[in-house]
Length: 200
Image (cartoon, rainbow, N blue to C red; front, side, top):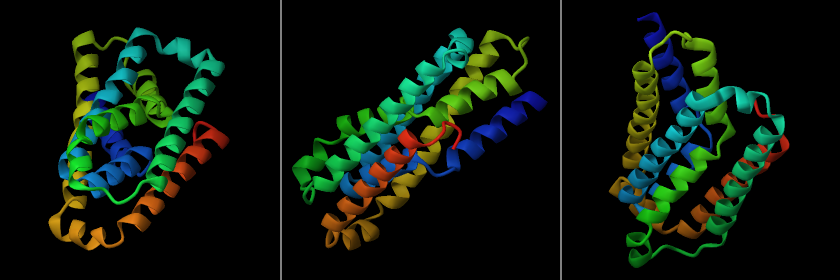
């Protein structure tokens, strides 16, 4: 019970801390609407499973291979900069573009999280430092499912709040500047991730 409580507490704190996932949800919800935000939230939850699976299969490989950690950090940073630049350059979104955005939003959420070193370190450290080595595999899988579900639920809530009609209508008039602001934020996050230590 103590282990379960520790995993749940650490997961919830990690989920609500701002970062690349929050920026990606904001981008999709504000620019493309609630359904795109929810799709991105689902993608983030699926991305968590990537970290869970390779951690269960062999976290030691990542811990003992600094070059691989560095490569993942650079890939994640590059992806954020790419999406940020695309958002910065995009014009106001029309309805057709919004309807076509849900698959891209799912992919954005998935790649943002799957390439996020912070999530990687969170999952690895939880399983190696908090969870006992004697914990049965079904329980380990249950922890991973909880991590994904917590991400999906939290970011779905964020997406719904950001996509409220009143807020969306107020933002339509400044959408071009909103695109640029979100784009700059994503590029800044990517640049910081590329330049800084993994644990920052």
